[in-house]
Length: 623
Image 1: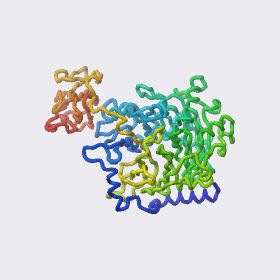
Image 2: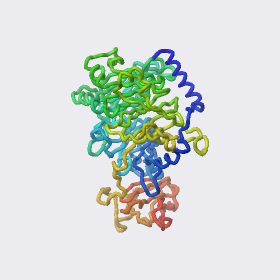
Image 3: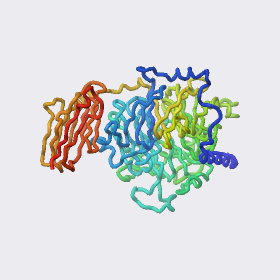
Image 4: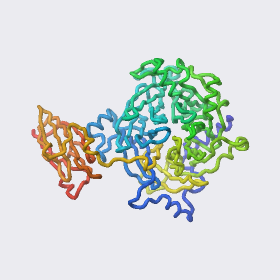
């Protein structure tokens, strides 16, 4: 790319960033009048009927995951992950409080579904916390967060995740930020290039329980790692990340990190990393085996990619890898067969900190001129790729290789369609795009700005998500919905891929504090410790009177003994900032200290029956 073109694109992007309100693409996203009924029919899910797909949105700085249905786009539920959520009592009972640890929020960016043989298996959903260097696992049997791992040692800014390998061996993670290592060590920012490091981590997943542990880490230069993807087929055992700031600057990054012609992608051989640890080639740092790639050749390579990239995506065949840079109007397509050959032949173009740089010309298949501000690419499994264009506020559809001679001569000819969206699209998602078998029916555009396309709700605006039909020769806009801030990425799963339970069977409740009969419930005291075993059933608590003294430490184990779907009970204690919601067959524990005398009502917070209002009791605290 010439300097003139680079400056033109940078100027276009800067203008867009400074004046986004004026960056509306030509054309309309709504169907023509004659097509409105057809579009509506494609998204209509009649009362009592169910959607064909689940849509799992990341919740951004809300710390949660949103669940919607496709094609209706209706919000169904919120899965609390990294932040307390009073609606379900998450963060108030002892188990979820322990998982949250010392944090009350997280920044969820990229959900990833578990896979078996390169296809979604419907077991787990993994999500990252960019803010606090954590990763969580949601069990899709009950849509509950079951583990939060972290803060991950030697890692800062868990943005480059959650990328799941073909058989869920690992969830792969890369750091957004670089810091002096080991953590807690001070180094002046002026020494950024020499004293700071990033990290790529392999989070090992137990194949039966899903339990996560840190398996290995690879030390990297202080680049800012961004989005990634995992390989399949010919690229099985490999993973890929883009980065920005290959200049390794530390201030005024909008200027200093955009000086070079290209940035670097990481090409990681995670099977080689796994073997290196087994062979004793790693060094322990903060309890984790860390591999220095300069000392262990073969685990890490760098590849030049378009400037300031935000995405790198492996196609369903595992051969073609698309990388886009925000400051260049092209999506670069690399051939993994050529990458393997370049590595084998050592076709390198220098090195960075002892890590070989693969020669760009040896592995590039072509640069597709998709448009301004390309970010992410998804695949429909039919030979088509779809790239989001932030500056253009559009989605471009183009054909994957192999290309014929005429196409290679003019790659404009591989672009088959483009559709405007509103406005400034970030991520986009097609069901199964990161697997061997995408669904290829719908695309959801997750737009950063909604710009008044909804009833005004004041200065804090929702995000816009637009549903696009990609099953025909032309993309068709079907529907628009709004979400709370801030979806970054999403995953789409066929509804029949999972069969969530709606009642916890009594036989599975192994909590030693669970009680199932009123006769088993009661209050016991040991010194100043008061333990309550409570039964919740329509429409009463047993016991419904708890007498304690000021200074007592109170632990309440409440069991919802219902075995009927949707018979949920809550326990709220007035003026004690205490609320838990207990699903049928579940036991939850709350703990607090009685700090003041008085009589305080407690009641069921979740509507459960005609006598729901009567489901109450008293906590009597003696002076």
